[in-house]
Length: 258
Length: 250
Image (cartoon, rainbow over all chains, first blue to last red; front, top):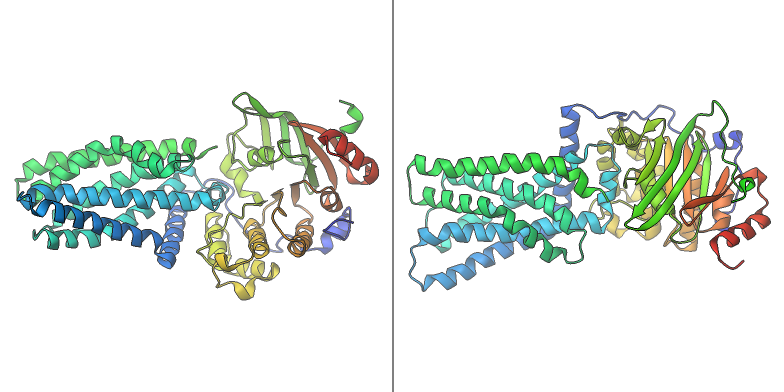
């Protein structure tokens, strides 16, 4: 007798005497639902990521510490150079956001892959794009939390008032685009052996227009340029976000499939 | 191949939970599945045996919509997997040696997450019922990382049952478990075999596989080489047949 010991072939009577399927049918969706169902799925993934992160704080703490260290290093390195802060602060801000973002993106998808949970998500009866959107918006939330810390630190260390309403819009647009492309490419990178290196190698060339537009727009706002000078960069950021969101939603199902 | 070894039921009017025709899966030049034909009637428990590299996990992954076939037709619960994979996933439950659980979340939170993803009605009562059934209700607020491997696998069963699936796919569910945990898991797996639910289980263990099933098949070299109902099986002969096909020593 093997390990499992007990009855052998089951008669219908024997089967019926065991734990039956629910007396009341457990209603589940049998077909793709509408948009509200779609966004409930997206919300469930975001909820899961946020709860996990609030419990461990592994990703947020490493992202915040890393971003602050980047700012500190730039502060020490550039302080003696005598360069005007308004010329360097936009660049430092986006370098810190980009590097911290890479850390978060790597960790976000690796945690799914390492525990086999990515397959668990793929077994759910949801559109694959909902998985992408949930993961991507989770990454946006974590990056925005980091930025809430980073921007004031930057402002204090470089003694430059950069907390302006329009800066929030630029940071949100830049973060959205970064997380969109980054989430897709982290799904690619997570399947490689050198994923920590692979993600920046894949991501940085693609986000060059986004970073240029973000830095230029940030600088334009800090030095108080006219709205007409800021608008083209905002348009570029908006266009980048929309185009890459659509592309990533469409191609994610092929990237995630074995 | 002797046709007497393949006795796949193909009666007229049989309601099949799973139908597979000419299923082929290639990884580059390597063919993991070479034209598999398989039909599992509704309510049947099929055990799929085979050595490492036989293609068992590849077949389960394709049935679970985790992998795309290179060629062939797959229908699950009467639904074409290729065109309506979301519907297929709504009737499937998968239990594997991978537990598909988030170890930073509690047992209750894990089930709540998967319940939401499957659109389960009366989710809270369903979660409570399942946690009691797998004996983890008292530990429901503990994070999964504090669970033993056996407890995690029991929770994985609850996860797979959260939407009361018509079809269960079990891919070597006892891998990595100690004897006691494997015994407990065996009891639970036996309870999964209820009217209206079809089960395909892959395993390396002959005795475990044969005990619970209605039908046994052997997958070897990417092909179904043996397929017979349990009641027609002579266990001694079957053991020899298995070793013959798998190349293992009896």
